[in-house]
Image (cartoon, rainbow, N blue to C red):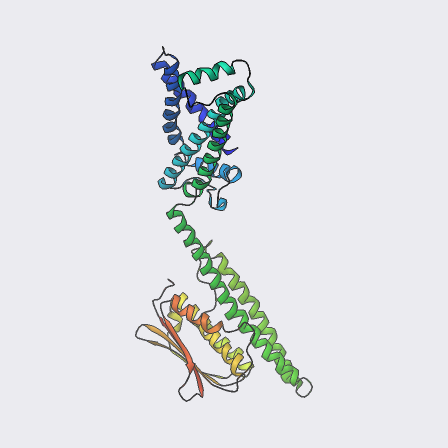
Length: 398
């Protein structure tokens, strides 16, 4: 069917060429008429190539090839118009190949099949026709049915060869150009970076809240009968933490709309909200000795937001792995960069969550995105865990 479509699309160009060439040569013999038919076929192809430069032809030919041509990778064939001259040139070459193959197969089928039937079944005129050829090619030209069978085999073989050629050429000529492949890879990388960013935000914000809620609920359950006032305070802290988590979740989901509203300020809490974070941690038993440099409120919004998430994840790791334990936090500005240092004593090993271990990796990704760095590990004497992060004050995500 794909070759039939090619033959049908060729007909307007072919008839126009026949008319034009016939007007130039009004008096012609049988041999010249035959040569005119072949010449018209080849002169029609440049006109088809010019037509194929129209951008929409690429999408139409791609749809036809996907539906009718047994291409090796149909999912790669074009679905839209050509957006570059490289794609237009490929489409023109494909269009010429499609129409030429369809025209050859259509011509051989329309002219050759009736001829072969006459020879095979000995219809009136068949013997005279065979004798005509044997007189001109004596000694080797097959006669009658043998000539008809050979002609049918030639038509079938040509049809199969043209179909295979189109199937192999479709992914090359109608598939994405190198520029289009690069654009697709860039879009995929952008989507992946956005997903990773969203995953980090969810891990750091909602994960922190759920860890705090779990510690507070456990503490409330242990003293519910013996110290109802403390249990009530813990439940109030859980309510406050849950409300904050809902707000954080709304903020994180707002990241999905940042591309649609490019002029919006970066969403999420900044270092100015550290006091609320430290107060929330204190309710879980993690007391933080914080040393905060002046002027943190003047930091670029993106740096301040990422620094807050890093501190939040670091303190959550203290709560998750060391439990209610004292921690030291230092946030300083030095030589054009922001330095964050978080320490806590190493206690007995606590069971890890299944699938955990993403916190430090997320911290490293945040620091790298701002052209900074991070380091984490136990001290030399093995008694303290230290997390250090440094961010250029003028860093931007890259």
